[in-house]
Structures are given as structure tokens and as C-alpha cells.
Image (tube, rainbow, N blue to C red; front, side):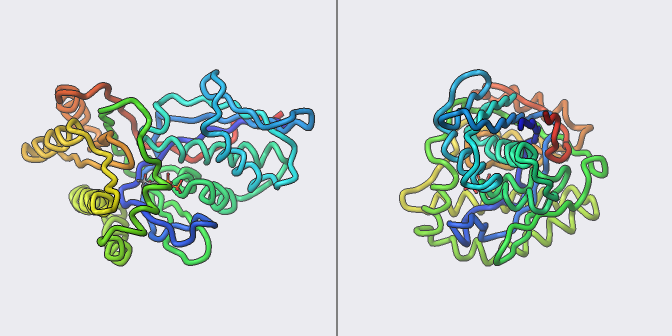
Amino acid sequence: MRATAIAQPNIALIKYWGKRDLKRNLPAVGSISITLRDLYTEMQVELDERLPADKLTVNGAVDQAMLPRLSACLDLVVGSTRPCASIISRCNFPVAAGLASSASAFAAITVAAAHAAGKSLGVAALANLAGRSSGSAARSLYGGFVELENRDSEIAVRSICDSEQWPLTVVIAITETGPKAVGSTEAMEISRRTSPFYASWVERQDDDLESARDAIQRRDFEQLAAVAEHNCLKMHSVMWASRPPVVYWNSVTMRCLQAVRKLQGSGVGVFFTIDAGPQVKAICMPEHEQEVRAALSATEGVKDIMVTGLGNAARLVDVS
Ligand code: DP6
């Protein structure tokens, strides 16, 4: 059986950093994200008894790097005695560069694999399976504003607000195009084991979740901006204080932050967030898109700009 699914990446405003249970990939903290509209990963999964091994192509080229994690995901979704699979992935943005490519990849492959195996699973079960492969992927099972709840024993995700209800714009400044040096899974473990700030990061997360949830419900941009920037800088402080330190920023990342600060100073409704990579995501009110895009494009060292609105949940596009 063959099935194809599409998922959009999501950007966390209140971040997931650290695991409570490595084996089941349970996050140590809850998180809140926005699902993007114009960036996507499409995954086609074909289960085929005749294949000797799983195979993967990404944008037409054979890819071995991502294959072990995708094969493990198929084992989880289809079962470990499954036939081998041919996986064809298409992605319209740089992978492994801090743009949440694993979120959209694992959300898409989970949906495609479940259908290829003839399993009819609800969104909660699919989110739980996607999250076991990559925590942030669970959030791409929903569109708009999404919360991954802080629970002891399972991954639980829910929608807080649809994309149409609060249509924000995201301007992404690409400051470096190569893959990141340390993957987030490994970096989180370094933080958990060695950062002196890790315990207080975990302890204070519920306060930030509550403030962000409240801001989203009341569409209070300023409150969301303040808590999202605080949470982002706190996560990076945890990483910076780890041993060895985990520093994803470069000098252009910093210049982009200064550009966002300058825009804020002139009354533009915008805030920044940065994930496990050097790219800067500026979230703004749609009416400020041009100013934000112009300011980041003019920032020395910025290689490219991507602009997107908020989008919808992962979905099946074909089954045959
Ligand atoms: C900084 O979901 O990639 O983007 O569960 O180990 O695959 P694994 O981690 P992953 O981590 C995302 C980290 C982050 C913050 C976030 O998206 O919440």
C-alpha cells in the first residue's frame, strides 16, 4: 500500500527543551507553537514486501542520514515486523538548519505510514506516535496555535486557536544555510545533564505556558511577544551554560535581534524567536510584514528571507 501526506513545520513560541523520558521521548516541559502555512514536507510511503531494505530519497537524491530515524518511526507506526518501505520526501525549505524540518518530516511520515498500513488512527494517536519520533512533530498534527501539554506518561497535543482566528505573519531570516553542528536531541541531553539553569527552566515553564495561553486567547500581541522572547532567551541561556556549551547563534543572528529591537522601538508589532539553529523568526502582525521584511533583508549577512502565514494540520493527500 502507498500513501502520501503533507505536514507543515511549526515554530515554538514557548519551547520544548529537555526530556523527561528518553526512551519514550516524553518532553520534560509543555510547549506552545504556531504551525506555518507555506513551508512543507511531503512524504510518500510505500510498503513493499519485495524490497530488501528501507530506502529514502529527499528532493530526488538518495539520503542515508535521516533514514535510521525514519525507519524507527515506521517500526513504531506500522509495527517492527513490517515490510520494507520506499520513502520519497519532498521539502521546500532547508533541512536540519533550525527550521523545524524534523517536525514536518515526522508528522508527515506518521500520517502517510498509518494510511499505507491501513490503520485508521485518530489525531491524538497520530500525534503521540509522531511525538515519540520527534517531540515537536506532535504539534504539526494540528494547525494554528498548538499546545503540547506537560504530562507525565504520554504526549498530548491540542489546538488553542485556529490560524484564521489570529492570522499572524512569520518572517524568517536565514543567516546560514548548512546543517547545524549539534542536533537538538543530543543538545537537550547535554543541557539536562550539565546546565546549572536546567532545573529552574523546567520549574518555571508552566508560568510561561499560562501567560502565552492567556495572551493567545485574548489576542494580546504584546503579552505574547514578551513571554515568547523571554522563553526563547531562557532556553538559549540554558544551552549556553551547558558543558560543552551549545551555541547555535552567529553574529548575523545577533544583528537580526537588534533589527527586531529597533523595529519594536519604532512601534512595529513584532517579536523574535530562535530555535536549535542560527535562523531568526520574526513574528508580526500582518500589516507590518513589509517593514519587518525590509529591515531583516537589509541586515548585513542575511542570506535569504522567507515569509509565511499560519497554516493547517498535517493531512493525507493520496492513498493507493
Ligand atoms: C528548539 O523536536 O527536534 O525547536 O524530540 O529530540 O526530536 P527531538 O527534538 P525536537 O526539538 C525541538 C527543539 C526546539 C524547540 C521546540 O520546537 O519546541
